Length: 290
Image 1 (cartoon, one colour):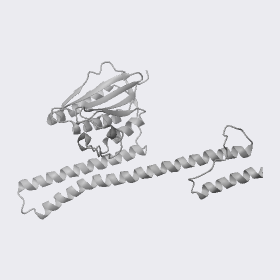
Image 2 (spheres, one colour; image 1 turned 90 degrees about the vertical axis):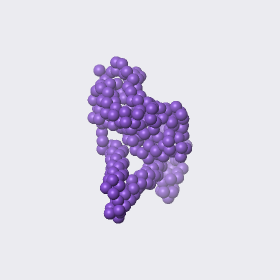
Image 3 (cartoon, one colour; image 1 turned 120 degrees about the vertical axis):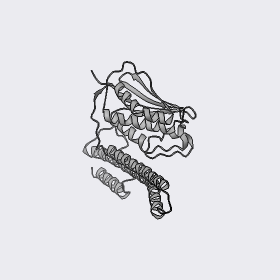
């Protein structure tokens, strides 16, 4: 009895001295049932393994946090520096500039200000979703009506961009279970991404597919497509491609926000694409129970 307790105590001391990173297992045969001392040793093994997993998870989260802070700093610095530059030029050269040139400087400064404001709003929205402060208010609703509303909202932009925006006939679809406002936000983010990468004369198509207890909603564009390497990282915050595909792909926070929203609604989100053949972004929502 004393020998086993001494061995267990030595293992605990070693685990603590290694800063909870290295340990030796007390029990080699975890299926064998023993007395109270053996059960204490089995419990220590499970606890130590759980502590190591949590420490590894914290390290990964800390690494992701550092990367996110670096990317946020870079993305916010660009419009802020441009805004400051335009305002300083306007202040120093006001007497030398014509009214038209002054108006151009103000318009450029406003454009950068709106860009900065949009990025900050997206950053706060993503932080709220990650902290689970934003919870979906799910209910049964008609998906076809939501798609029509979103389509009408973007028709003017499609005409200005010379892009054909269309909705495939959804047919008879059952009610879906989800948050209407958050689902609309996902559709907007996917459409914004599609407009960014669809050239003049291209097309963006919204489509639906009934798959058992799920409804799949897709947004297809005729852009340059996405490489397989980039597809694995598209939904990461501020991901920027180094391969040059998707017109120097820089997705910001829109797709990351869309993924968080769909995950909160127990759905799935993904992308299918090949270089030179456009891209299809899709997500699923559960069918509402009768």
